[in-house]
Figure (cartoon, rainbow, N blue to C red):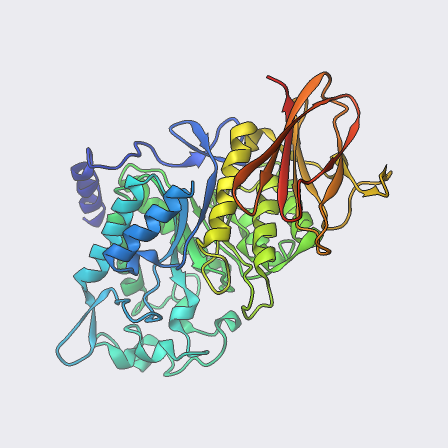
Length: 479
């Protein structure tokens, strides 16, 4: 019956004001990237919160307009309901006695979600939903579990004994001790709690399946058992299929090392997980960050899929010890290494959609206007260091330059800001580009074009950035 309801809702929604007629899908010609209506699309974005759907309407509209004006076209949206800012609401109805009824909805929660989906679709901003956020159900840090409707003390639907829940969960959720994440049939087969969890996901899909600009991720940086994510991924696909839709699903693991075993649970199952999210790589820096992402591309090369990074960490003063410069560098390394979707994480762990983030997105769009990212392949061999005016014989192995090449077409290079405050200098291999070439500097810190230059191919050439700071240079055949 519920599948029929979803289908009827979908049919009734046809012809609405969404600008998107077809859903996202891996691009047939280069499945490392997304396509829309058969046309490849690079997803770039940032936002000042992870669950924008909870924002008051005026603030939400202003945020989405800022993202779109910057050239951004993707946001993250956790279905989180913990009261971090004070205006968040829970999805369940609160009764006069102060307790929640998990069998009744809070209309405000779903009205906010529907508005968010409509407004993002109108602006052609894609949405990566994360259904479960482990930080909503913990007492680590702030005691979120103590006030959550799923806690038996706060609802009329079950007791601690019936649910198998504990009164407190003081451990960091990375310890994976919260019984909430063990309810599926292949785990503890919790027949009391699972129906309410499933009802929530089905209600979410009643809204989201009306639209074609949504990607689905099961969890935020999870350490859960593999069976947990597989259950929800299968449910989403079953519900979508019943509604005549095709959707893309992934899981996001907690391990900062992309070569770790957790990530293989997604990497090794393309039949279930249509793309991968490697956001936790953004806790790494420099060559480690670059090399681990490239390792994933190599590991997935037999079955290429889009690689998303929805949380680009890096902002000065946060608890991780990252800096604003880290955020910019991570975004640009992933850009040239072949990520399909990149978003700056919310403050204070990321740049959000501040002026630096806006500049990077605009600069990336300028690069894209010269050479398509899906035509490029990351290539460390095309850049070499320059010492006292001399090109060195070995490829760059430090954090001074990162490159990607489209053979016979051009080269793109990102030059992170020199820590000494000097202009960056790099040698670039132009031996496969014969004849007259044109180059263009892009100021990553301002988002504007820098100087143009003409040169001749067929040899290595030394380039010096116009001034200190973060720069990109693109060299292509002259038109």
